[in-house]
Length: 547
Image (cartoon, rainbow, N blue to C red; front, side, top):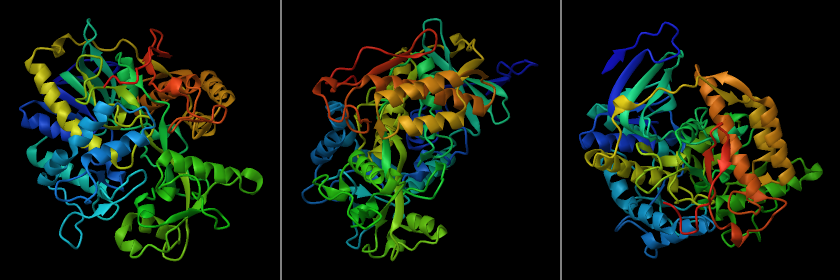
């Protein structure tokens, strides 16, 4: 499988491997794709920069939004699920993509259950259903109360182990190998000690998750640094909708917290909990017809406004009153444990919460089969922009998307290989560059949190861009930290470029200097890298979408 390459300076690969498909990331999209590709007879290799079970998927609490035959609310339907998704997306969803992915949900969940995933069952014997923000019905299936992601990941990892899917742990993907004609033919990687290698493959699937570490506080794990998005940009792919970063309204507040913060799933609000400020006044009263179950962008913005009107304008949290939720510890064991660690009992104590970076709605522009604009490069999951999410993700659609598109990517790769559309891996050239511009991470996170989070304006976005420009330095791509910092930097630059240009407020993108939506902006912005490596805006995607 591997071939040693003699390089005493260890600046070019010291080993090579070959595969039909290399999957970057071991979350729901990546493992679903890997399992299906192997079943189709492809030689697959999964590359993940942590342990196989340490991706974003395991932290998903709420569940999978899906309308299952004979196991749904009487008034619910797949069509209503699609309509709720379109409403949450604030005019920027690709309607055809939404309907395609939502339609694929029931079959995807059936496959997952066949692979061993166990979901919570109601007293009636059918799957228990929850309701979350933006949903007009109870349609969210869950596992372990609020540990759905952990169960999905467990089932997929177990299935991958049973079927012998090879996994290269603790390796970070750095850059794509490109043929002279610009096709992707593999990737370079680094192990945890900085030893470089290369995986030559006809197809590369980027399924590396999100970019929550752009911000000081996030629900994402430490590995969510936008590496896959940066790799795709450098390979020539287009990205879109990166200005739309969803802030989850309720992560558990602890003073001075940095990095990953415990999530308080909005399913708690689905069971009747309410948001209140420091003097007990409801935060969502009169804000939206769905009240506490309004879409996430609406709730996060309302909390931010309420914090700004606190005495002195320095409020940094509100409270979630869940004292009316019966059996809290049983229904939400993960949240209960996080509260207990702070000495809180949700049965009697209001839970301090604050918004934090949660989900990137944009990413690599792909079809609903995961194909990007670069032959041989595919993307799925949070790193991809299929058109499902638009300007704001509907709660619990992310696991659904990973399951549906992950399966389809494998089938697309098999079809493209059979049709002779992909490159000969032997023709892939190793990247010539060994450095990339990178900002100091703490400075980047502070400036993005201050100027490019929920509330934005032209002056703040310009200030953020200036700080980044002044703090750039050429960083060798010989360590995991170096690759991550370079990725965070180029992703931050792309986000700022798109946010500056979008002079309106829509979905997750809230501009205080342009507080309302503008129908002239009912389109997605494309971003590519210039020859010098700078993110630049390209032609917009028209309303009917590019997915």
